[in-house]
Image (cartoon, rainbow, N blue to C red; front, side, top):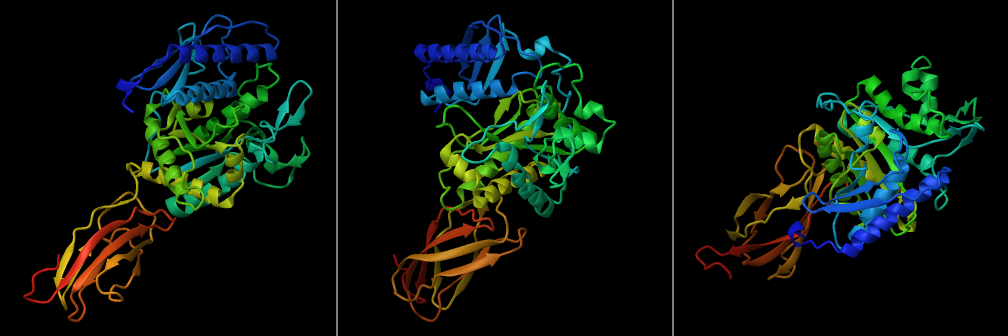
Length: 467
């Protein structure tokens, strides 16, 4: 839909403002602050962004309200899209100013993200893990139980799958932000693999309190939650990796919201190509799997304000694999087929970004009709667009054959990504006639092109070509 055809109903704006005001007031009341905050909402038709501007009474700290604002952004975007307005992202102001206006040092981003295609080191962060909550110092998960599992405990397996793919397909050196050991962590008496990154880095580098205890003066109950968010990109900066990938599952009170989303930081536009490639790769690989052909995935990556993406000095993206709060997405998240496909998509996006390429659909180009004399042959090349995972299989089937039994389906596999995909068309013997072929290319991950048909005509020498 062209942006010039949009019409923003005043009633929609009213609904968005009321919902935003209700949610921020409830957020504050949950924290013992009884107040009502007015919110004004506008929609920029050019870049398809919603801007919600909070009035007096709500100014979160630089590391506060990350989860709340993310969920509010999803809510506003969902209602707008239900009204027919496709939205790229949601941003927030506070009495007319972005949050970084109030915290220019704390929310500063690197002047330029470190982009080095030769740096194939990656930090994979699988969120979230057990955290210590003040003042009782109880250990608790950061995400709720959802359909029998938690985000904290399902994302590490996704990180395992992604690590293997990055190493085998991309030649990457991969570091993990969480410890995957089943040995007991002495403070919590829980296996290390249950713990969040903060405690892994505390044990790994006890003297680097600037990484795992970066908010020493914070007195909030969830201070270690905020430190955990910061730990991951700070560790990535310490390692000097070329890419930071943060894996999450999404959640929302609206159980109908679902699908794949990928975020980059709005103040780091150089990271957007990585986010777009990762999202495109995930969409392609997931939908190539039987049963997931129509799995929802956003068309464009979204700008956000996530601390993980902001603090990393390298290209950094946050991958929301699916919504654990939705029954269908939840079932997918627990399916090894979905896990493998989604992580193949992430790896493919990283690899394309490094190579300076843009993810595009795997498409077989039109094939010209072929006319041959009986007994002759001709080699043709099948041009295609996209970046398939080799080996690629060429599948020939007959849509129509004028001489039943004379047209034989075939499958040929091509292993060399640098060699053209070719086929030799033959008119064997002296049998004249026509064949209409249907051709599909299918890559090693199951991604297939749409079928393309063309006609082969075999004519006896001196005879007029068949119609």
